[in-house]
Length: 285
Image 1 (cartoon, rainbow, N blue to C red):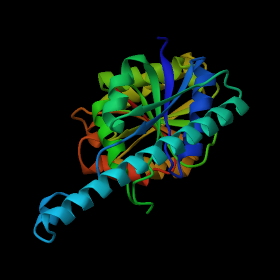
Image 2: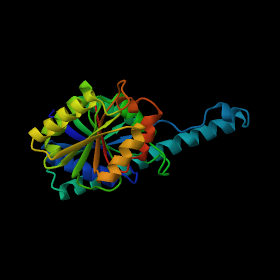
Image 3: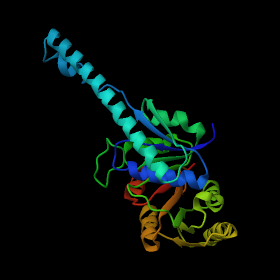
Image 4: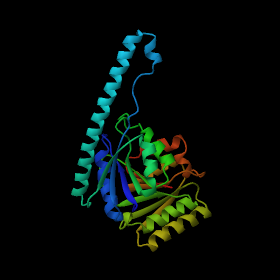
């Protein structure tokens, strides 16, 4: 199958943002668009030890049967709701100009399903939080963290409302992964015509100045307007301050590694960075 833009759809407040960013990505990349809704049929029946001490065997047996029937009804409702969401997502994408987007409903867990599909994925678009996550602004969906760790394709984490990116910031540390990110940014049709910014978080050394100059030259050679900076400070705070100062619309960063920036997606700093971002974050592998 041709590599596609894959959008994970659910009933969360982020669904419209996922649809719109996925449609924009599909059109910019000239790649097919596929929407997927995953129905997790994992039983919600309480563990038996919570019931056996309080109910006689016959009563417990009847209760377990009723709970099982309730789960079947819930699964059926979830499937029907999912089909409606997929139909709405397809219609919205068609309105945005996408030709014949594909819709799929699959059973399983979200993370395992996405990992199984990744060989045909060019870009995964997913919301900051899913429908089961707490809606407080400081909460990050646990599924998103697991997807970031286990997927080996670029992931675009998006907010609720779409805004066409005009200013893009890449968090750069001179590593092999970061250099690939700059080269991708320079040549990708996804960022054609965008103003590109490069930020190195660290001390102002000759090595860092050389790395910054390479990144800016690579972007300018590809006809991008490019500017950059070297700033000391905590990585997440420094990136977020730069975003606000320059009106950045999308952040690009690499996943994993040992430098300060690449380490973001390993521990608690990852959660702080992703949870604090109000703009899309493109995570590269």
